[in-house]
Length: 110
DNA sequence: CGTATGACTAGCT
DNA sequence: CAGCTAGCCATAC
Image 1 (cartoon, rainbow, N blue to C red):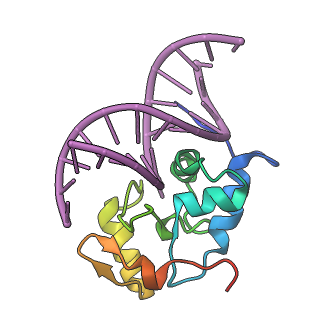
Image 2: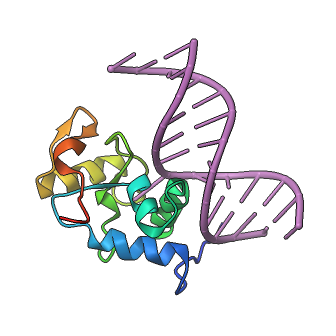
């Protein structure tokens, strides 16, 4: 299944835009991004866009985690392992396999 | 246009 | 707290 959702004006492009805005050392949940793009229930669709995204340099998809802080997916490196390592490297702390959302959850307003 | 899929989420057990 | 189910969404065929 080849996906080419990176089209202007598409839902996916908005997701990429916002994902790229996530500050270093912070993480955002799929549901949060979905809400920012205007579809609070499109968390799933957001995840698909991340998977489609092959450029983690412009879209830090590793800063996108599940609503409970659990790491999911990631198609680069060793997958979840690489994703967790990337977050740790940015200063994000974990509780077991979950991110401390209470401290590192990205605040678009802040 | 209808069906199938997936890096989700909230609710219940 | 961990595991399972049903609901929701955008994209692909």
